[in-house]
Each structure stands twice: as structure tokens, then as C-alpha cells.
Length: 334
Image: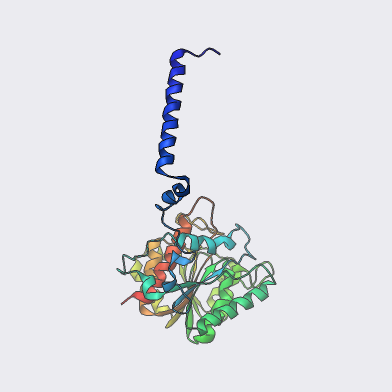
């Protein structure tokens, strides 16, 4: 192939410039120091715990709140992925801004937030897993910690409520979610996530907010169960303060807070195992949690049914921020 003298000359000049630049780089950055000098510009990654918190604010001994990952996925029937929820929430939490603009402080410094290793939910029978959850929750409560379970399917909630009710006899449950979950059994399984709140109301009364999906059998059972339903259709267009005031009237003095992320409208949180349209938005949920924390005593909580999607992290981040905001409301309101 013929190459003109002009093109050949340009290639030679470019080659000489490249050699000169590389030589200068070697002189400026000797081999033993080049990598070290470049890497020194980067900030180390935060610790692999909720919030990426330093030891002084995340040790179990000094923390008041404990993150309790429960990657349970044994009875989901539509979408899958809840076993990846806890890890996704914790990963997102490490990128939160830790100053709360509402409370005008950094809650983690007032609280201390420890993170436990994930509990093994895959080995053993479902009944054995439920017993282990009950035991783990009871141990946290006996240590005077505020347990925050990260799910995982909503079937994890009944044993956690049972353990909490053993310590707090006047316990009431506030459930934010789309599905009533009041079946006595589903597909022959009374421990199904579709029966979670039926098992809960066998332990203590409940108030359920944002409900918009249920079966005929559940609708017929509701008048006979210890639960008060706030239907999504009745509250999403109503003044927030009005319906929140009514929820507060129906709750007891001590509250277990369980938030199924499908309580949010599916346009806000599409990454759940059974997303439903017509739900709550961010400010409605956080306003409710803040009011309950201000007027009642929230003693434990869980956030469940995140099913993370690859490349879509908005729901992961929302769940992480919801946990952090809730802890701020519980511990840092004046």
C-alpha cells in the first residue's frame, strides 16, 4: 500500500511526541510511586454497614438502634427478589446525606446505628426460620435496642411482632401497605406473606393504612378482626392532617411499625413483589410516621418487600432514606 511522504511524516512526528510524553511521565512519577500518588487522590470507601458509619457511631454496645437484615423469600408468588432487599437497602444507605433538613441535625450521632449480619433464612423449614426470627428479635429487645428489620417478604413480620408483644403488653401495630394480608391461609400455608397481618392481629390489634387490594374472603372477615382499615381511596385525596389525626386516635400507646413498600404508589416504588397503583406518596408516608413518633412510642419497625431491579436504584434509596428518617423521628424529635 502506498503511503505519502506527508502522512508518513505526520506519523513519525506523533510517535516522537508520544515517546517524549511517556518519558516525561516516567521521570515525574517513578514506577514505585506512580500508583500511590494517583490513588492518594481518592477517598476510601465508607464502612459496609447501614449509613457507612464509623465505629464510634455503629458499635452494638453503644448504639440504640440495630439494623437486622432478614433476606426472607419463601412464599412470594408473583415477582421474586425480596431476598436481595436488605443488601440493596444497606448499599444505598451508604450514599445517604446524613444531615436531616427537617430535624436540623445528623440523627446517627444522636442514636448510634449498629448493623447485624444477615440472618440465614434459606436453611431449615419456614417454621424454624420463624422461631429464629422470634428469638433474635427478643434478644435485641432484652438488650434495650430498637430493632429495625429489613426484608425480605412481609411474612417475617408476625414472629417479630410476637416477640415485641412479649415485652410490651399494650402493643399495637401500624401497617402501611397495599394488600390487606388477612387471609387465614394461602395455598395451604398459614405462614404465607399473604397472611402476615392475619397472624399479627391474632397477637395484637392493628391499624392498616393505604390498603387497596384484598380478596372477597378478607373483606368478609375484616369486621370480625382486630384491625381498622384506612383505604387508599379514602385518604389519597383527603387532607393529610385530617386522616393522620384519625389514625392516631385508633393506635395504642406503643406501636410496632411495619412498612410494606407496596404501600407506596407503584409509580413511586415499582420495585416490589406485587406493585399496586393508587397508593401513597413520600410525604404522606413520612408525615404519618413523624406524627406517630411524636404522639406515640414506636418500639420497633420493619421495612419489607423491596425487590431490587438491576440498574434501577431509586426504590433502594427511598427505602434506605425511609429507615433513616424514621429513626430520626423516633429518637430526635424535641
